[in-house]
Length: 105
Image (tube, rainbow, N blue to C red; front, side, top):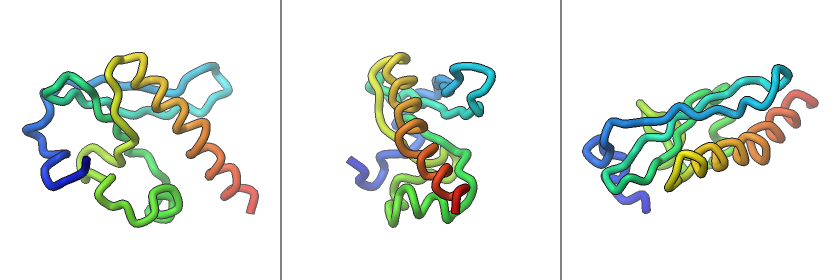
């Protein structure tokens, strides 16, 4: 899936959707961007990792998951609702548990 050129700008329409994890005033607000591909699917990117250590802990040596402009690739979605679901699940199941463990060291 990530052969050379997958994240090339020519593969995207330029349209994008800002997605977030907001549920209530007590939830720390995070945002990602779903960039629309030429085939109308969306690639979801998050660009608010705390540091390189967090990237390595969450993605290991998968530097091909990172685009300098867009951020780290989280997945692909077919609809707006799917994009929200992918991002919110990733935040709840991956990012928050990692940050909670890190804060409790």
